[in-house]
Length: 482
Ligand SMILES: [Zn+2]
Image (cartoon, rainbow, N blue to C red; front, top):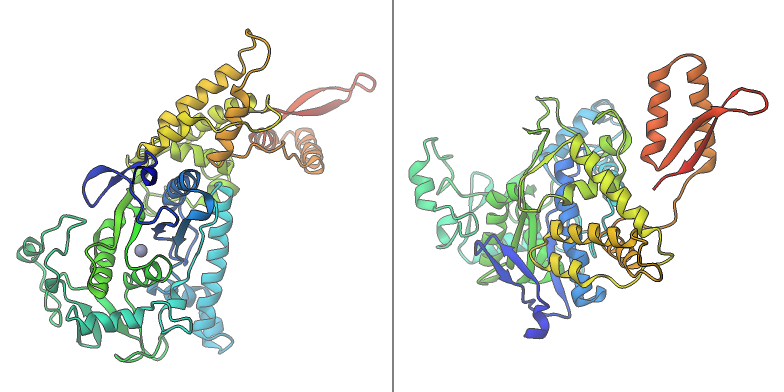
């Protein structure tokens, strides 16, 4: 037992307490995190769970060994938003018969999933152990792994679901402790419901497991007719497929507690007859942008890709690891206010750490204090304080001789997902950018010239303007600044 705990404590939404983490099987620690719905670029709010649970994944691997942790993050590639997007983007091709709706949907989901993978890799996230796609788990599978249609069948059989008006609905009244995660009381919900209950539902909280599809809509054959699954059932099927009926940790954003996670719990526990679905439920806090809720109507809605590749946020591009650090400077359960100022602060901090870490030719021992800080419910702030301390020690040359701080710092940065490899500067690209900037200066296009200078600086390349000592012409040299 003591061997399995490893000193890790995690806040559990289910108990509303910070609990000592005891894995069911220390040789296979199992975590599931709800992944993206692939119909559009992932926004920066989506980056938060990807980064937070990546840190937890890294910590679990450190504590239990890389081969003893299974991390599943799904891709939701069946959703009415995806169908709508396919019709919007490929309407003409579908109308002319060039593409079927299903082919158009595949175009949308594959392109979006590829983009998501690129985005999160740039944010320093490791790939999860398995990344199942919902569409592969709708119908019965050749390998016998749990699937959605079979799970729904089990729920009907056990008296937890019913068919009405072409839908299969989960019967919330059949589960006495429904609502234990969100602490919502079913009776109160029903008494308080002012809107008329959909006539075909037994209770207003009953939710869709299966619905019929029109001939044009994507659908799968099922005992209840050709249709498609509701939103929640996919995670019950995919987590059971890779992690079993009861597993260790389930994560996601705070906004998923109700209804998504509540309903996942209801489906999984009632289908399998278990007391819990996952022992620990973890949720990251909300994200705001410059003090406001992010929304398309407010014009402060940013995709991860926009921050990485365009200058729409703060007038410049931001390196992925700066976004990563900015996200982790706030404890994962706290709300985060994402701002240009925060990114600048993260960039400065990262530059200081890296400059100090670069004094070491190779990484040394991972500092125990960093692991201990993260083991206290991912106290990233305390871990970062230790990094800053190490950076101070590494650049304090008063003692002389060997200084173990720089190698430790380097190890800690690599562990936390920051790039500590040799500076990768594309010299040809820098030369091209300098030439372009000189043209712009000659044309007196100062803003554009400055933008190029700042962009290079963001990559760690500092320009120095001077005069050629022989010809007296303007010339620009550069150096790598870390
Ligand atoms: Zn889910």
